[in-house]
Image (tube, rainbow, N blue to C red):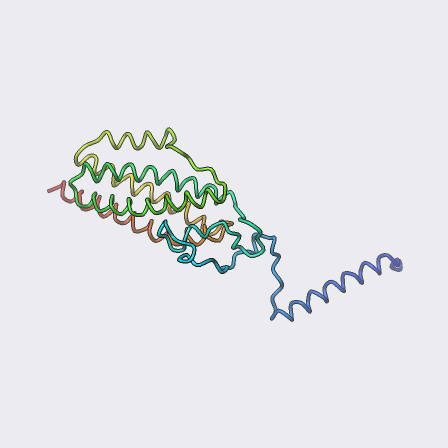
Length: 229
């Protein structure tokens, strides 16, 4: 075996010093290495956020969307906005426009108490969510759709063209469909968001969306039984 050269010995010594220093650091931190503040995979801890009451909560959301984007992720200087955050904001804004248009029609046209109950719930939730997502997106410089895209508009127009029980059934089915899709996007945002506030708010939305789906399905089941009598 050839003897190690001086340069190789120096490099080996440097590696040993690095390892020993890291071990000492680990021991000093109770067995945990310091997190890299610039690695998004190590910034998944809950950080302290400004008080929603102190900042004002015009959107009436807990935690407040107003607190989003203020660099509350550890190691952040300014918001850490991911592609997931942008998609979440845009999809939520688009769905809010659809749900509010359909709910307005349901409250005006339908005499079915199940339909009116669902429409009232969706109006309350999406009015708050639309306001909150709009303010957060403005601060984070996320562009939101100003109107429905062609497919969404066609879906809304198809339902609005109906009347009576046909409208009621189509409306409840669309709510169940839209909110089920929303659950997939929102659950992904809980895991993949870069902004602490988005992650927290998505977690708050999940049980609300689940209840909206259950309400729509209960309405469909109830009216299916009535129609068979």
